[in-house]
Length: 220
Length: 220
Image (cartoon, rainbow over all chains, first blue to last red; front, side, top):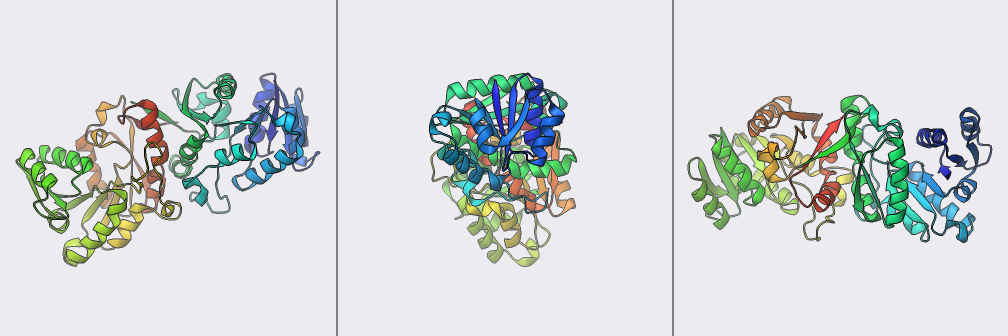
């Protein structure tokens, strides 16, 4: 499948590399084509890896992963909505992996912006791309766990939500290829309020466990 | 031990009954002594159970459980701080079980008031009782799970936080008597921001699982 990645940080690179290894064609997008991080990633990843602007990556992918910092995600998505032809955005799947964290605050006390109480970044991304199909997933685990869930013991759970069942099904196939066995579909995109609100305890557990390689498993 | 319970709802009654069964002397407090719910609970529970005002219960208990609705918790605690002698409050343990949920909104979409981003109910309770020792615990599980963690499969985790290690130790003894084997001490009371922020996903998982008898287990 053709996959776009928005963002050249740890999350984008880790997802992009895994997706290329799985045989997908991956284009990583950043503010400028030829961006140092993106070009280095494309070169080191080799087969199936390319880079360009955010618009290039969004245009290219049948499925586009949003791997942006909390404060950058919405401005970039709004730019994509303006610069990519509407026909290209219609029905395209965007997987929103980002969290509305204010990373300017020192760990382990990130703050969630006020919007989390009455909306969520996932919902705002969907509003900015009304003809696309936004799926929120992977935002509750560290990027190394995203692509290799077996590094935490047992089959832990991954939360997924979005308005379109078909899109969630396609994203679930990719997640299963990463190794995820237990996906909990919470329902429509408003449930991103639930998964994004895991960040305050996630950051504290990171400090407590002294490793980001952990996850939630629901027991009942 | 002498234990006070603030609140006559499901949580207060369930905790009070279990504590009386474990041999503690329990006084349940409400707005007025002789309150219908409190009196019925004391009568049906029998040995070790009594009721009175919030101040009576706070005065009586060596350990006091705050089992109040999100919007009622702080006003009641501020009333207790004014009506109970300072010498009685000094060093007394308050276990804050409450969550800052706006229960006026229909399930499964409760909202957390804005204060959760920069403070927490646990911290506000501690501020209102500066000479007491506030421990946040049990607020991340349904009340039947609180007193009988074995009703969910496996040993799931209970989060605890507070400023005083000795108080957390004493509360942990009570929690172990309830059956809790895995307690995760997150640190000081500011970590209540983490555990209270579990509510948005907790409420959604309640809807998803169609039972409140579930819990989080951390795997790593």
